[in-house]
Length: 522
Image (cartoon, rainbow, N blue to C red):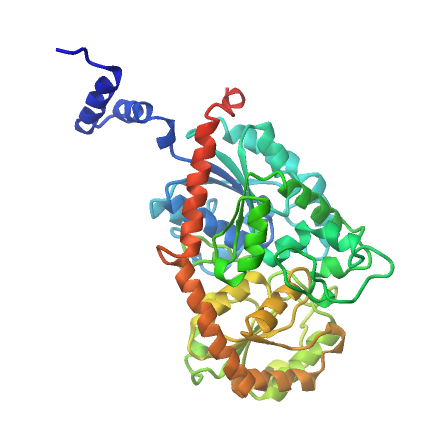
């Protein structure tokens, strides 16, 4: 009888393990099956703005549903606002159990292994980050990383062993912290691939005098890899600025230097909508289009304000008759802008659901709308401080969206098949408008310059969108773009395959360096 080999002994023991239900059997199974079977554990750090928190939370849920352990790091300030909003809304908002200290309590009840930690961003919780934007950005640039590093040092001592650090691309320190603790670094880009590549090739814009020079060129930009052409007016606001020494510019310069050290880049876009741009980026780095990433179920509360339920009012309006208006969670409008838009909405005669944040016009206090405006709108208008946007966009009464062109809003709006009227305010929103109104033709441009917005133009464009031929064309085009979303997120779709491939590649890289963080954990 031939001698029994070690492999045969291991296989015999593994075959007996199902008959034992004890911690020892689990330990033996994990040991004998090998390290490649170990559950991946990702530390996930979100950028502390609502437009970044929403896709980060939902990517964390996606990864957890595929077997990851996630330790999600939020800032104390964002956690405080989210908890307060949930309580003000009566404890709802998708928290799934009302546990005030843990936004992922509901996700864990659904069987997902997501742990939750918070850390200071270097400023007091009550500090007004919207009004004091530059001070907030400076704290994220110079202070926040030290607090994250202390927390990461604690987390890596926990089980299961940490595999990687996932962090928003706009942070300037993730590759440094990942390298220090022997972790793989996954950069998460929450905007379209077009904007990533513009920032990634900022040196080309500078060298060709389209950025950061006294006599900036105004001709078409046609030298960015994977981008056939783009007008200077369609660049992000930071790439159009004359003052390129601000703290936000410092962050952009440094974060894209840092991103070059990423092991993987995940992007909240769809391969079929930006094929050339994504293909060019994939020559440079492991770049995976895994979007659209937004909540389909409310497992986690992410709103920073108490949300109004608009369903009852919407139920009273005819199909496609309501224009939804929202300018996002952070940007501000001038007094002139808000007045002209308000008057244009009134002149249009369409039904209006308008989100008007209390801080939408700063530094002024009080009602930002004209005197008596709410009363004049009567039953034709509903004005709220915040709402459940996805629920509103899904409602059959909604026929259009006047939007600031935030990327989350665009993805949600396309998913719901609602055409857009574009009024970008700052940062990525100008480039997003190009995609919506120019490339995909699922929306109209309100006006090229914020300084030239007038009530008559607002009313005219609203009516074109809601009842004109231009609006009909947008509705037809949005069907095909939405179909691309559906196809991408199907089980065999491009985004699903890309996410699965990322997980395979991550496991392969982890298996290739199994002891990379052992010295730190000890």
